[in-house]
Image (cartoon, rainbow, N blue to C red; front, side, top):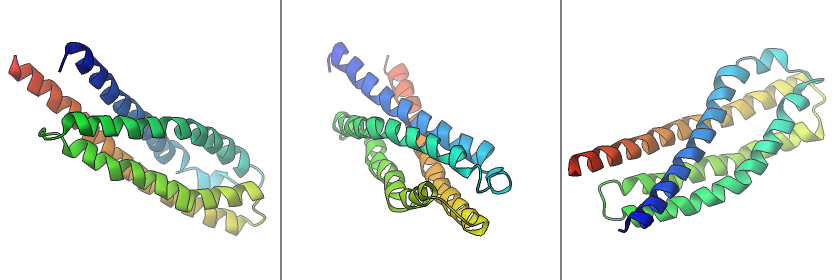
Amino acid sequence: MSPFVRTLVDINNAYIFFCSSIYLGMFWSLHLFWFPNYPSTLNLDNYYDAIIPQTTLATKFFFVTIPIMAVAILIMLITEWKSPLMWVPILWIPGLLAPVIIQQAGIESVNNQFIEGVESEAVLQDLLQEWMYLNDWRWIILSIMWGVTMYFFIAKSRRRYWEK
């Protein structure tokens, strides 16, 4: 592989790490800083402003970045095919699909109920619990995938270092 193509592949793989880091940071922030306070601080008067504008922006952002990431994973799969690290992009296929499926199959329904308006504190708390539970699954999956991606870069750098 020419140095120029190698650089393009490295940039491609770095994009995967960039996206996984943004994804990871968002979910760790939710899990550590917002979720612990949501049940006690969100109520019928303030839940909308605390959830919907942020999720709308995140959805728009990931609507652009995730398809590009899927292409980058495909490129990683092609370039790592038959290498000892080909399991990384193979694992990324369900690692990227699962959070998207959770979003589309579960979280969107809850978000739509938030948008339509919640009229009962009990319903709000039930929806918050479901929303946080589903997002916790994405947090777990994306934490694992970030670790897989970090392993990929460490393994690549060590292999390059020892090949010299």
